[in-house]
Image 1: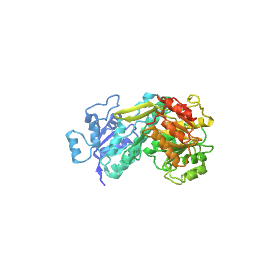
Image 2 (image 1 turned 45 degrees about the vertical axis):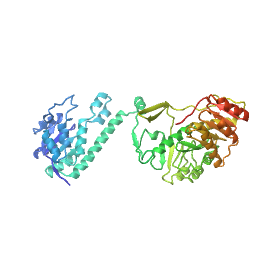
Image 3 (image 1 turned 90 degrees about the horizontal axis):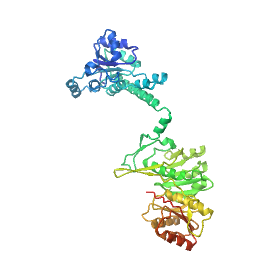
Image 4 (image 1 turned 90 degrees about the vertical axis):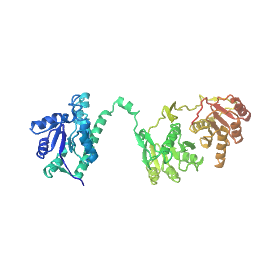
Length: 509
């Protein structure tokens, strides 16, 4: 433990209470004093020897006192380590080492509490003082910091009882006290500037601070999130969210937003794609139906509901391993069940509105586009076949179109009774997507008889319609727009299948 004898001190304080006793003790020990402005006046008035910082810096106090101590010859003397290299540099540049810094801060909080004069408030934001405190606290191994008059007792003790010798333990403690003071001071300033005005509210929406994540898509990739997740959801349980979790959660919330005002709907998301979606009369039945579409992919997936999770649903969900469960609310019993496994992430969704713009970094820049916020309705869709969809088919077609919109292109979706039966997504050809969706439904024992089909883009050939018809599909929804649209329409007419064109493509890359 290294003790240091104080040989020089810089004193610059706003409050002079208790200062006389301190400076007299320092003078009695032969400690060299440097000071500024009003503090120099005070010490000089006592008839005690004190040097102005201007004698060190060669500059007077300027800009109405805003700049007095901000100079390398002051901060160099405080920040220099007491080793041969640093001491040689001090000697070379004629910088006196400073062993003790006694500083307090302008009364910012008191000023805010007593006036609304913005100019007066701004002038009470301390710059030099807080910089001196931070510098001395950083170099506590060699320098003692007295950051307020409340810490004079420490200084008096080492001056009176130990003839100006300070211990490393004392200096370490005072450094911690100093940083607590600067932290509180900065927080008070931030609180004033962040007062809840309409202007600040507008600006805050565009300012985000980075939150480090465990890692990126893979463990060797670092990652950060810029934004305020607390506005979107409350995390009720589980481990820290990862990069991949957030990407999947975003996809899940965008999908479920489409069913915000609908009946009880449940979705299972895996790698941003919905592998199970269903609407039923209860959230329990919606969950069971969504899981039925792909119980294998649900393992380790993201689960999302548009209604409260009750105890029965929670107990059934708890039978499988999942990464994240999202819902607008949870019953007390459900939450008790779900939080018994402490690594499962439980999110209570708050407000979520799809953003108006989408951003993606690539090459040496950023792509910006409008978000895909269009969803088909009966009124803005056109029946292009002789057969017109019945009520149930219309409901399934619109449901399937939503699912296709939120799946990676190329995609084909099969739906029956508002249950996703099979999907092929991210394929390099639409016919491959169709084949995969059929094979997946059949593998899980889900019949496509009476189902509807949705495509995120037009059919360049009638092959997908032909294949779907062979497996019992009765209605199709697609954007249309191909020069060969009529081939698919003609096949549907010949086969007694209804086809609807929305006029809106939903590529998702």
